Image 1: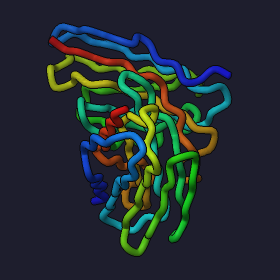
Image 2: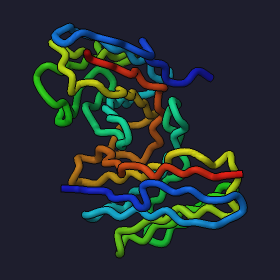
Image 3: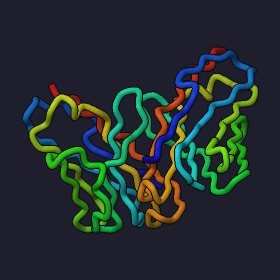
Image 4: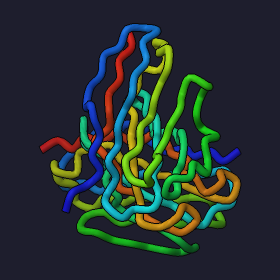
Length: 116
Length: 112
């Protein structure tokens, strides 16, 4: 079956530009997660959705970062006024159950963002 | 604050050898995850370990969990080139609001 997909796969932005990153989770998955992965590092949690509700956004690094999942399926991570330190791979993951249950997260291929 | 440390961060080894990757974490947690990542690819789940003494095996990989020592190991037996990848461990707990906290990864290169 189809896995988690993300688009675009690569994005080059000029400093100050706004970007929008899309995630299509596995159909029927309740939970959706966004992570930021810097080169040579493990992923860092950004935000979590249970259906359309954003239950945890404690990892968003600044108010320039905004995520939504209005219909409980597709999610968009938006970064306003991009800065060079935003350059990273942005990973989306989904899982069938809610986050307090033990559940494997299925990851998309990521969007590699480069801010010049 | 929940922290996760992996070692080594880089490992180069010959095919046929055995080796172990270590994952230490800083606070109480009973849920530990191992993932594999190939260059430019997505993260793939390998194991989920839920209790003290848990051991899981898949092919040449075996993972174990010691919650008292706050330590998990990923053991590679008779390594083959196809196992070359970066391996991550991750932990969640009430301290992290059940969000995954990840180690920095162990980049494993297996030479034929």
